[in-house]
Structure formats: structure tokens, C-alpha cells
Image (cartoon, rainbow, N blue to C red):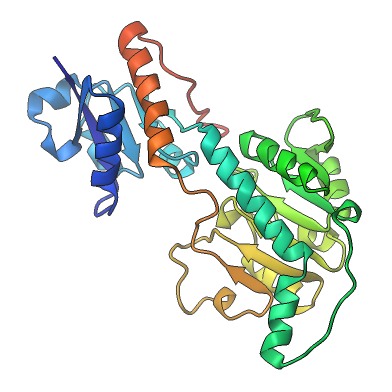
Length: 314
């Protein structure tokens, strides 16, 4: 007999049914249903739920809930909503997601490396002007964050010929990557970067981390790629650095408010590329298989997958 497994999505989420269908196909032994389809007894018996940016009030309607499995890798909003709650959080760890992110990091690094923004500005101005080519071996791409996403990105960048450095909270050793950690290490990494790629989780420590001081430590003519969270970057400090041409360009896929409001300066700035949070979309097929395996293991053994540290927020 199949068990009822609720899917709790943000109100009005347009892909809720697509997720439900993918999850159901991955675990036919369960009955995956929207939370609103549960009756009172089913809500009382629910120990685990699958979530996609849920309304916390929906989770409160499951009084015996022990843990939730997010279908996203980023869970800072969920952590905030569940602070003080005994409910544990399991985030998605999907090798496909890391590979997709690494592809995006390489693609947009090459976009900056080959001067695409500069040539686009010249086209708009009707200018025919070639610039010197610099091989990737003479450029350093610095990665903020050496977790699953950072390690996959480092491998792609090294294969393309770039020098790669990386920063993490605690010491790490990655073959072929110059690794830094801590406050002193951050300054050294920033000073040596031609292209800075942010892949950090949003935590109290990383919020506003790329402020005027940090951006000022980048060498003149460096560029920024932010594929992490918008709140890690001080928007006005970034604007000032771009206006002063201290930074050459910024590729921004994440923002403090999404969708990015039409009046925001980033849309029209000639040294900014705006992306609609598309650097590493979750693959429903691979993600559903991972969620299904974790749920199945829990049903069989009672073992909860590795959970998020609510203090660190990842």
C-alpha cells in the first residue's frame, strides 16, 4: 500500500504539478500529492514532506513533521522560516546541478575573457576596433566557495586553460587550485583575480561580503560573476566600481529582489549583464531520483539524510 507524501510549494508556483509528476514517477511506492489534498488523519501521520519554497504556515499544519526535503540546493529562506523549529532540513545535493553550474561558470568566464561586452558596446557605437588577445593561461579566475559547485567549476576552468584560485571558510587543498581561507586569504585572492566568481551560500557572514572594501581590492579591469545570492553583493558599491571603471563588467544572475524590478539600475547599465536566475536550473529528473532515494532509505531504516546546519545556514 502506497504512503502519502505531501509536496509543499510556494502559493501559485507554476511548476508544482510538473514536480509532483516527476517525483511520483521516481517513487511509485509513495503517493505524492499537494499538501491541500491531505485529510486530517494524513496530516497527523506525516513525518516527511518535499518542499519548494513552501509557505511556513503550510508546514505548521503537519504537527508531527520531522524533516523536509528541499528540491533546491539553496535553502537560506527555508532555514530562516524554520529557525526555532525542530523540523530538520535536507537540501538537494545533485551532481547534475554542479555540472550545470560549472558549464555556466565556464561559459560566462569565456564571455568576459574574450571581451564580448566590450565588442557589444563597440557594435552599438559603430566602432571597428580590435583588441589584443590574452590567452587563458595568463588570467586568474577566482572562485568564492569551494563546495560541490566550486570544485566542479574549478575543474572546467582548469581544463580550459585558466589559472584558478579559490576561497573557503576553512582550509582546503584542491589539486591545481591555489587555495585561500579566512579574512587574510580573501584579500590575497581578490588582489590576484582577473575574474571573480561568487558561488557562496547566503549566511549572516556572507551577506554584504562583497562591499566597497572587497570590490576595491580587485585589480583595475577585473570582472565579477555572481551566481550565488544577490544579498552577498553591495549593489551601490558595485555600481560605483563599475561607474568608475575600476571593474570592467559584472554578470549578475541573482538579485536581492527577483524578478528584478524594471526601474533597477542594473537593467540599463552598459557594464552589466542581467540574467534571470538561470545559471544552474534544477533538473527535475535527476533531482527527483535523488529525493526518491533519500525518502526510500528513510522509510526502510529511519535514517535521515545529512541535514542543514541551521546556524551556518547550509
